[in-house]
Length: 91
Length: 191
Image (cartoon, rainbow over all chains, first blue to last red; front, side, top):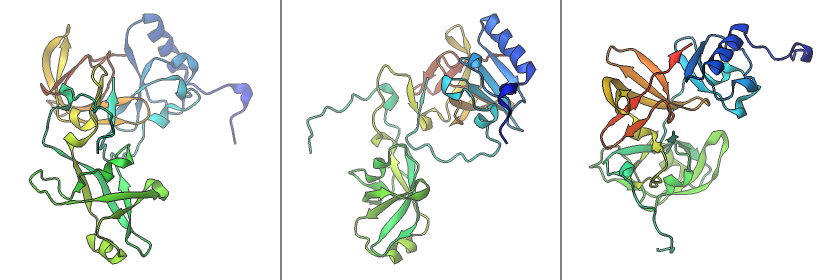
């Protein structure tokens, strides 16, 4: 069953505090979190989170297309590495 | 055939490497006319139908090659292809699980002036801390490049054996020197 609309999206309170601190600090920081079920809010865009996958923290650079998704979606707990034949990384 | 288009100029990022990379592997026969199911690892499936063919070995001295033709997309992200000279499903089955390779230098040239790199060019580079734009202390080596949907990540092994992910962006990886074999990184403060 879907979450009730009146509650709003779930975000762990500590994550909101850390995001506020990161934005007000103005520095390039990474926010560590174990809260994989927290929803990505519009105010998180541009921040970098390190989401725990049970073993390691996976950095997630939040973009506007991620809004509404959960952090856990970007830190898989099971890995298939595959082959990146002609995959390109862009800075 | 000259189609009148100029080939993009190769940059330093495309210096000859002599490496071969795996582009596809067989996933079985399809139908009775010798079509093959192929699992393609490239973003551009047309790479497996390279005009010079694809190699059967990762060893750069082994020149055995085959010519593949793409037919159409199949389920589960696979493609149906035909191989020159093969017309029966038995011949495909006899090949077992075969991988096909392409020379790194056959890949399309990367654009100059754009900070874009092939994943396998970044693998194995030495990692240094950034020291105000210069190379600082060496901390380890890039094991691989991964992307789980949250941007490209360098997977780095420190000299003490610890492994970690590092965001691949202009702010966190200021220098990438593929020719020189190193990258410099800026570690972010953890909140």
